[in-house]
Image 1 (cartoon, chains in turn cyan, blue):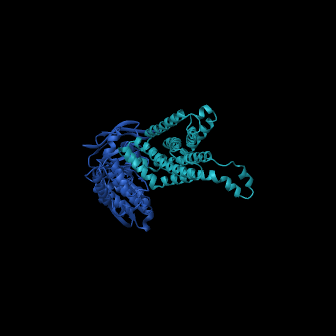
Image 2 (cartoon, each protein chain N blue to C red):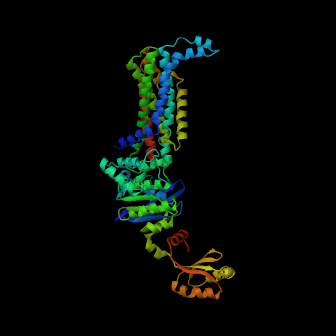
Image 3 (cartoon, rainbow over the protein chains, first blue to last red):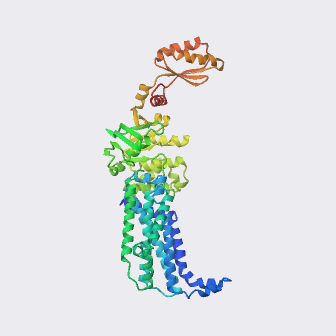
Length: 253
Length: 312
């Protein structure tokens, strides 16, 4: 019950503070423009005086370029937005005193933390869904129609990847008192994971491995599904949200 | 019956003892003034009693629930922090509605209570305006409304009027006065005039320890000594300075506090003798007077005396 009350407020906040709108706008613009850019980049370059030769060197774009571009853009901007929209979720409420105002009432800290994760996840689900539909439409229009189910699966894997970064940032937001510190730690963790991904054995376990699997699936390319990577990502997401709650419940407000 | 019972409550931050064995009882339906200078441990006490902080030692009960049972305590209390914080994107109506949902109130009951409180705190006209644009006084009144939404048995108010202008302060104190008899109010403050105006019982805390606790009138009778305010004419300034030194040794005088070169507060321990002898003594010193009056003892006198551990 408390979770629904808190979730209601969080979703309302996503809407009223334009977070939902911003996330949706950014992801739609970059998601939808991916197939367009893939298609028209050689032509754009050829129309630039002096860059005609470079344009001519670029091979004729295919659906692979469109999907690759879409996955890359959505993941990159998704992660940046996940950092920005989550870094203050708990830290700012602690700093401002709204957490104290709410938690002195019969609102469990678990509901407070989980609702923040769910509301942000909701924002990204809507945003990726609309961006995915837009990109699907333009890919079909400019290249060929991708298979619907694999396309959906690719977007779900993209979402799983973004959910992990939401959970990571939420954990640091619970741990720290300032949103800047939460952002710094989340960004630092991402860099560490990027360094670790140099090792191929580790790379397949990391959340970013889902992106490659997603692109492969959408394009129906040969390759094994990375269930381990998905399992690790989902487990880490649950662990980080639980960790955020455990850290936060011990804190004095 | 007691609404709040505190036994040997302690809170330590590193080497700092914020609360050092506080023992206190607040009776039901009282407006209790928790008085102390800045840093005395008032906010720490409230945070412990509301479950927002954990004690290092001791125990306490609020509305019959031990503070360790946070969930049960939070159902029975209301709390207004010193600087209440809100979701600025919400309207007061939405904020109170959200609080009502947290308390599990049904739609009809919630709507009725929200309207009732908005009327009570004078925010009915701005119920649909964003809280972000509210003045400090309006925020404080909304803070009081959210603290009252669940009809709390015990209401904690942390410095409810200290940051407000005189009109805002009057509004908030008027509201607190209307609560007398309906719930127990535990109000921390360092503003003595506020306590004097609205509180029935007063507890004075300093350096994490309770110095005294008693009904306001009893405290005034117990600790205040009658005082005389004497103001000399400027032509008698030198004589007045000399008189202050000699008068300090008079047997009925407890202390003399110079207010400035021409004014002094004379605290006496025998008011009848002082009434008779003080004017004679002043006349003997050839002092021309501007003003001479017996002043009503105030809580400020008691407070200063107790905090300083000495004379008024």
